[in-house]
Length: 527
Ligand SMILES: Cc1cc2nc3c(=O)[nH]c(=O)nc-3n(C[C@H](O)[C@H](O)[C@H](O)COP(=O)(O)OP(=O)(O)OC[C@H]3O[C@@H](n4cnc5c(N)ncnc54)[C@H](O)[C@@H]3O)c2cc1C
Ligand code: SF4
Image (cartoon, rainbow, N blue to C red; front, side, top):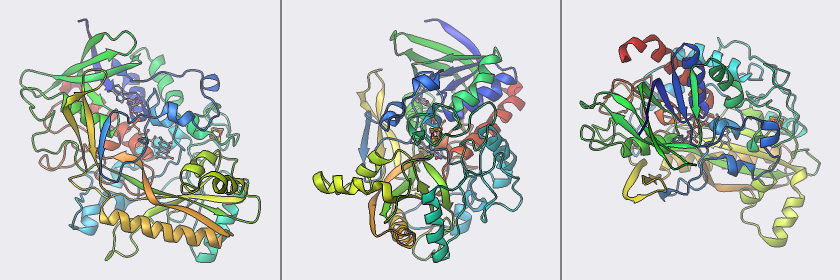
């Protein structure tokens, strides 16, 4: 087996991996990025405006054994260079200060495993500002924004007709609303075009007005001469030193040739999504780490959670142009993100509007109880509809966990993953409340019929590699360094101790920038 040598190996070149590649290679480090999927270099011709396009670009879950009621569909993650940023709907929220301190705020709650993050909003603040510039976030300062936050890099998009109706409805109910922060160009920005409102954000943006990490973060890495990208290859094992204190490198399989390769590096960063990061660490068990890498205290894979998500449609009496426009968050309300009745439940939910090519989504979600003629009739009403989503703050609990099944192997001969994810009582209370409030908003905005799917589906998987100060109750420190290994890092949503009800990706990007700085500043220690 040929062994290649690098300063840093990145496992997965998705959103976080592309961000690390950009920073580390420009700092002069020799970086190898190994990515499961393809590198689409010609977005205009590689992507197709087709609602099913999202399925081709998303991570497939066929290899997981799933237990519990929390995990139903396709994991909300990517499967190619740029990862989930190819399919994301580009809502780029900063977390609130309070989101980093769930345990301090609510203490111990039965059935939940709350924890504070090992860092604060202030530790991430400057990285949030850089991340918003990378993404070209378009928005105006909203009533709930942090008092000291700078102006957004781009002006907010205009409201669509459906957003104006939702605004009026929320006004009537005394609910505040605002344009959502969209990583979608409202004016030409960094050589990327303005959004043409085609409505197909989830099948990849052909004109690159949406932030897509492969187009924004990777070119500088590739041009630096320090970054090598190996595509269509799957990392199957992390190798460690004889005393078990260091990651030495990785073993990966080229999916086309089926050949196995080995690469070594001074630092390994695992950024391949919450389920796969955990699976890889379990499957890299060795004599020094018999229960999985860094899993001395049985924390690996625990506290896995997502955003239980509710989808609703309100049919009005007028044309709403809902079928045009970028997909999510033209108008949002963050008024419900904070607990309203902490005796009953904790956490909150975020309301966002939905536009664009959503007919199929509407059929499978909001209209999921309708078939045949009644489904057809309901679909005819879609052009007169308002569509909304509520992302609820799924709570972490120790028993919701990703593990592996040692004797069941995938096509690469590696044990498959098992996901235990049961919604908590708190999750159920939150989603019920979100349904209630969504219905009120839709009716106040002019809906004469409402269709709300009351059983939630999961979006944005997080956790499994919880960050924390105490190695007995977490897997990594605040920089994503696995506690018991000197040079093994993790990036991505698996690190999150809790997940707010806001999209995680701006925070994933900001954390990846912070981890990159840490690796660059301390690189001599790893040599
Ligand atoms: C339809 C959709 C809409 C979304 N909308 C939003 C939104 O509006 N706002 C928001 O904040 N978030 C949104 N998200 C979530 C967002 O895409 C993710 O939070 C983000 O992509 C996570 O970044 P990541 O780097 O951790 O993982 P990813 O971007 O998924 O990257 C992981 C990469 O690792 C690769 N990989 C996996 N295993 C291996 C292996 N063993 N070897 C090599 N490579 C491997 C994968 O192919 C993938 O490319 C959305 C997601 C989807 C699917
Ligand atoms: S609606 Fe805008 S951001 Fe979305 S795919 Fe079309 S052009 Fe790109």
